Image (cartoon, rainbow, N blue to C red; front, top):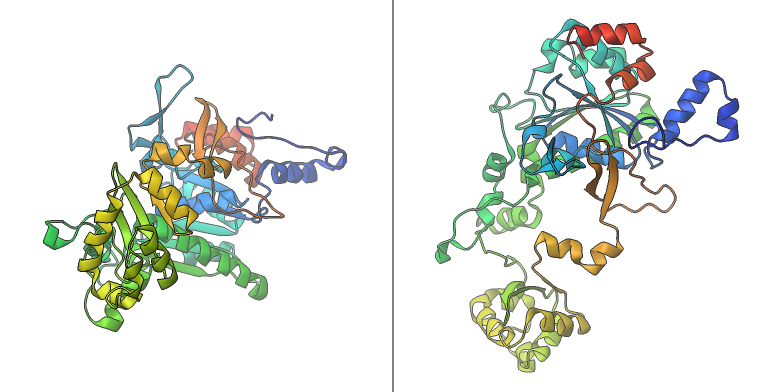
Length: 438
């Protein structure tokens, strides 16, 4: 274990013999994750979720991520609790579960970017970075000399990704936006929730999916820009809008409208293009059943004791089943009511018909498959001893992901990063702290 909580230091004989500068570089390389992005440095000027989600993925993949936060306050989500992580004595810390969910693998540096000195520090960090991710209001960072135009002058190879509610141009470019309003404006809430004829109202998804999906688009966009940089030698600017991302990922529902001409409506758990593909009540709870083709439907019908359904012209093909959804679904509901969810899960599984229980999160993390895949793990934490985490789902064969750094405390790595990356001495670090710059 190294001197910094959560880090592990590995030195071999070559490293011990190396000159001090090279040894420091090797030590840093060992300290950060050994994933496919090892050697890439990301300067994270984002907060809340879309940007931090993207930069957490970069950290998972092995990039060195430096999270810049406002002194004394930090990322807004640090206050978005309860629940808060409990310390070793069971008392709540100031580390909210929300913040912990999007910031592992990073090092936190506090810098007052409203001050000229703070702006100069960020510019120096950008000069030593490969990627900048930010989600300030449109034009806000230009006032501080930290926009793409300014930072690309000090680092022409910089890939700079701006995330905003509505993008860098257009009539709403200056408007603020949070996930829920983007789910509404981008069409997601119009297709989420029980049908209107059943008294259902529009609903948002249970997680901030507009933010999450924008973060994932940011990951792929930045990775593509880094790959292109290998050919051109130049960085570039990426403009990502939450509204654009929300519209883009509606996938088949978008095309249902664009091709069919009718806006899709809310259908609860049902699928607009496949039947049966929805949640059904059983004897004791609910089960989600996804019959994806006619062969599966024939097996499903036989399992329910109604083999004739597969020859019935109303149900024989998926198109016919969609057209006669109102007739078929009640018949299926009646048949499924005769056994429990566990019993149907066994029978359907043995027949190769996709199905699953509707688990709450306690049941999710108790699922044997989820446990086998190691989706829940713990990291060392300086306040709590350990902090639970949810693993990145990507599995690499040659460069496996390693999780060595928990979500950082506010400003935990300020002196370390500025000393290591910029060569700032202890006297200057103390002066910046005294003056409220860091």
